[in-house]
Image (tube, rainbow over the protein chains, first blue to last red):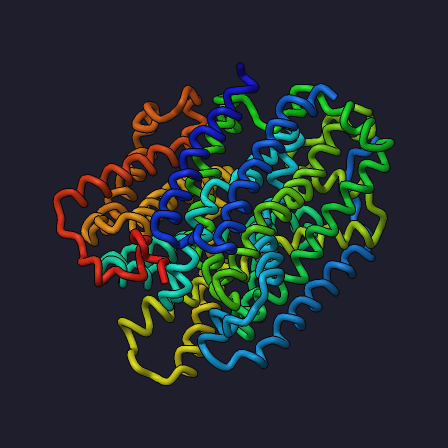
Length: 66
Length: 509
């Protein structure tokens, strides 16, 4: 649990901040999902989130035991 | 087993030559600086890759090598936490804040506050920001003064800080933002190269990556520290102090970073730069600044380095062990690069605020542009001098980091909350913004005198860690002030804040 808690907290609380930001910019159409460029940037934003999640999961749970 | 640090004459030569090269390189760009737009925004002509490299050079501060090597040596791979927790605010930065600031035509955050809120909010934000920036420059000068004094004790800490300060002031005064970005490009490459070179040499020295990895104690191989201990390096403390408050301050409000993104060709170039910075360069920078600490821990466990080696000296100890004469000077020059590339950005930022938020609107109005360019240059000189004098004040503190933590903890949350609510909540009122900054700062100052106020936000972190958890306390208090005052005061009309706030449908063509 002590190893899991920081990951849950970071991606739980941080995830709320991230998702709130996504909702704000898509509702305001500052990120316009009706365009190919907008969809590409959404993929970059979500991809970045998943990249860091995977990086942290790897180094928190897998790498220490290698 | 290595215990002492030795500096050869050739190392001094490398360091001195580096100083003169940067001074000359930066000053050359003064020739191109003709207007205040050149001086502060570099003519808004730079591509994303130049902005990205410059951002990293600014983000890796003077004390980064020393500070992160220290925590890497003590706590292992969790030293990377602060470099890898920036992505959460990227949606609001890249698609909310950046286009608002870029397209509204403002050149400073206080100027944005004036247009979004009112004059009194601009004034209070201006002074809070100037105190933050000048204090930050002083800390940068001081930390390098300490490092250089350890290597060359003939010159005292203050005088080393003064020498570095004068060099930064000369080329920033001559060339402004163009010099800052171009010298940061060189210095960014230099510090990344030196850090990676050091790490590579260390892996070779200990017998390869596998030997290195297994020489690190297993509990030190995790990405995160324990949730709420130790008090001075807990996960939750770092998450709130750095991941939420400092990261938001750095990207949304720090005038140095704002000017950097405003110097991009367009907002999309800024987004590209930000993506590369956070997804690629920050993980690399995490290795660069922590590498010596990890190597130091492995070397101690493998008996290559004395177990008496102190955490504060581990960077210099490892660098001196791995590098021959000349190369050691190169690594120390990279340490210097980290300082100068942070300090020059901040000096230019202060001069920008002096012109945009004090001189032009309130002291001498409607003068030709070259007059304000001259004021900007004098602003850079005065900011540098004040920061050099602050070194004398910082020398009185037992620990500069403790002073720094208290200092930034008190400054960051009010501006962060005011900017975020201002940019993303149309109902947020000018009176609420004013009291968020002023009332929030007072509430945080009170919590320094009465630390028990932070306890309800501590997540079980001990009192020693309250300087980290004060960020959460500050964000919460400022948020409550902002919301409560807004509910009882009159907002500005939607029309008057169009383009300054993320309104529904604002981005629609």
